[in-house]
Image (cartoon, rainbow, N blue to C red; front, side, top):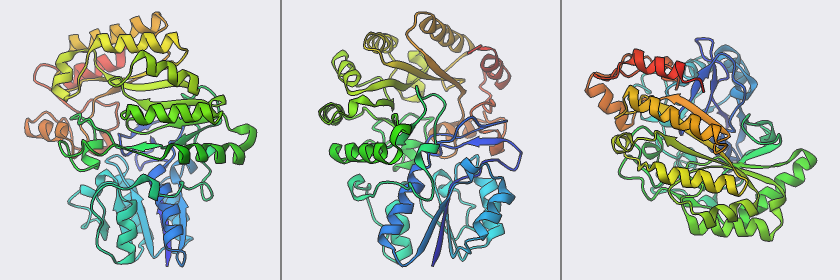
Length: 423
C-alpha cells in the first residue's frame, strides 16, 4: 500500500501564495516570506511509519516547495498513491480538492477544519476525519473502530524530519535563524468565538479539557536530538502551540528542566496567552532561555472581549509587557480589526494603544489581521444568520479582506481601518 501524506499547496488557484496554519487560520499573500512546519501531518507520517511498517509512507509538502495545484498533482502522482491524506482549511480546500481529483487515489482522506464540510463526499473525498486525527487515520487504515477522546501526546513519535527537514521552516519573526518549530503541548482551555481551535478539539463549550502536555524530559530529549542533528545551524526552538503556558505547573517544570539540562543556552520563542502570567513565571522563563513571547491581544476593549468570549483586561496586558521588558523577553502581540463587538472608534483606540506600547519599547513585534469568521466557528454561524457576510467565497477568507458587514461598522470601514493602521 502506497500512502502519500500531502500538506497544502504553495500557491492557490487564484495565483496567491498561502501561509498555512489550518488549526488557526491561513492567509494568502502575493509572495509568502516563510512557511509553517506542518506538525500534525508530520506526526501522522512518523506514526504510520511506526505502526504500518509494511506500507510505503511518504510525506510531501507542496507549501514549502511553492507548488501550485498542477505541479503538486504531478509530484504526488509519481508515488502512485493508493491512499492520499490531506489537511485542508477553508482557504486551501478548493485547490487541494482539484489536486486530489487529478491524482485519483483509491482512498482520499480529508483532515483538518474542512473535514466538517458537508460537500466533501460529493467532491470525491472518500473519508473525512474530524478533529485531531493521527490516531483516527491510523485506525481507519487498519480497519479498526474510531478511537474516542484526546490523543496521549507521549504515545506519538517525534514528527517527520526525514521526508521534510524541520530546520527549513524558519519563520521570519524568530530572533535568529535556525529556530526549529516544536510542539510540547496541544489544545486550549479557552473558547474564543472567532477561533477554530475549540471546534477542532470537540466544539465550542466542549473543548476546555483539550489542553495536554508532553513529558518534559522527552521534550528536552527532542531538543537535544535537533541540536545534535543540525549542529551549528540549530539556535533554538519555537513552541508554536495554541497555548504554551496554559498549564503553569507543567511550564514551571519544563523551564526548570531546560535550566537543569543546560538547554537554556538556546533561544526559545512561544505562542502563549497573557492570562496565566506572573512576574515570577516571566523571570523563570527568561532564565530558561525564552527570548520571545507571542500572545493574542485581539483588542484592548473589554466590550470586544465579552463579544468574542475572551477576557480582556488592558491593565493585565500592560503588566505583562512590563515584566517581559524587565527580563529581556521580546513581546509579540496579535490584533484583530473588525472583531465582533468592535466599532471603528474601538479599533482605532486599540491601534493607538499598540503605537504607544511600541514607542515605549514594550512591544517589539506585532501582527494586525482583519477578523475573519472561519467556517465552523460561532463567529461564522452568527455572521451568516444575521446576514453580515459580504461573501461566502472562501478565497476572501484570508485574514486581510473584510468579509463582515456589521450594521454600525460596514466592511468598507473595517477595511479602511485595517489598511490605514500604519502598522
